[in-house]
Length: 410
Image 1: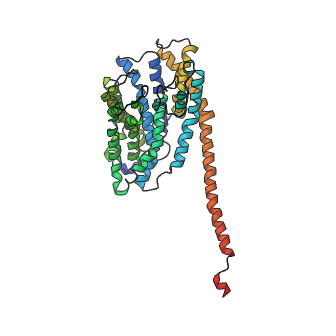
Image 2: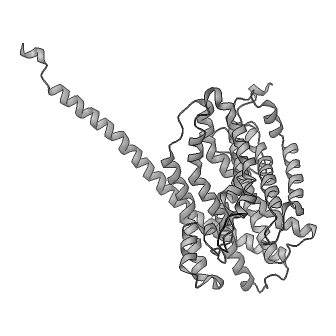
Image 3: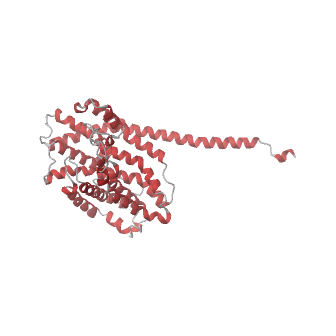
């Protein structure tokens, strides 16, 4: 069977179940690295550096977002169809992120003892997801939200990026992938540019979106490859479809990032070259993990990733991410465990179990109702748009029928 006959890539359009399972693994990896840090297992030993570098799951999250949100723009460019309208896109992103997130912020700042008495600027920064731009705005139970702040800015800027590449269609469409790769490579310079900015203390420019563009671009490039003609990127697609090649490469890249080449695993600021290395390798890591899921034919199955358990965890993964630090902060006093005194396995199991439980509740009572409410609103809006032209056309026809032709007076 030729590659042209094998079927379209799984990632060309529609829901890709394996991505949901991969999202579940990413969320659990974030939980694991934070538990390791809070139980003093993150250190300069090989094992300690490995636990600390499970934070590279954020690269996977960013790559996932880049792929899923860019796919419609890439498809429009390669197929010559109309670009997506940004209105629905912005509404869906806000409804997807903000309702549950705002609940978490209020709970953390009101109920966590370490977060009580937060300043007005801290409240404002966290409620508006601008904490990476406000000095010392990362509060207890919410410190992981720096990455959500970066991701939200990516959401806001993505339509502008699509507009910038709108001219790369037709005979120019093949330039889209090289241009995106060039953007990712250029973004590595942010390690030096950002550190040179005259900013107030408490603001870290390395937590701004330019530095993380390579992670997002990994998903953008995969979106382009998934919708491009098979013959154009035949070799790349063949390699990207191989789980053995890509996931073995991902293990090697992770091992390299876990060395001092990837910078400190503590809260110390990395050297510029270490930050640039981690950003570049993070983009490669995200691409290697996601490529087999989106470039392989649709008929190829991933038994573990598509299992019912991981599909459910994938649906709840956003809740796991935003709730788990509040849960972790509560596990220590509730179960009599002192922070930074070991017992990582015990704390990890408790944190994961309760985080999943809280996330399931959050999904059922906050996230899904908000999504359904938007869907109903969009449906009503679409119906109103259909009625208005029909009514105008009917009115015009009625008016025309009542007019007396000039020839009738002759």
